[in-house]
Image 1 (tube, helix red, strand yellow):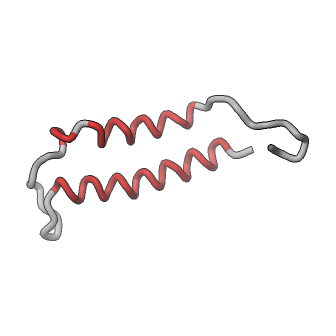
Image 2: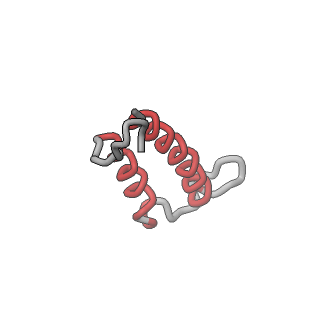
Amino acid sequence: MNGSGESRCGWSWWYLLFIVQFIAVLWPPFYNRIEPVWAGVPFFYWYQMLWVLIGAAFTAIVYFGTKD
């Protein structure tokens, strides 16, 4: 609730960024491989860790994009 007693509800186009992240990690056959290796870490692992960072960035973007 904000100061005027109204509750925030509704939908925003910013939320579509979460769908991008969801689709990118939803289909494991896309990233279930070893090559390319980065700093000795197989693609399967660093791809998922990269999406953790991207997901945090998307969450911040959505938060500030939908903030009153």
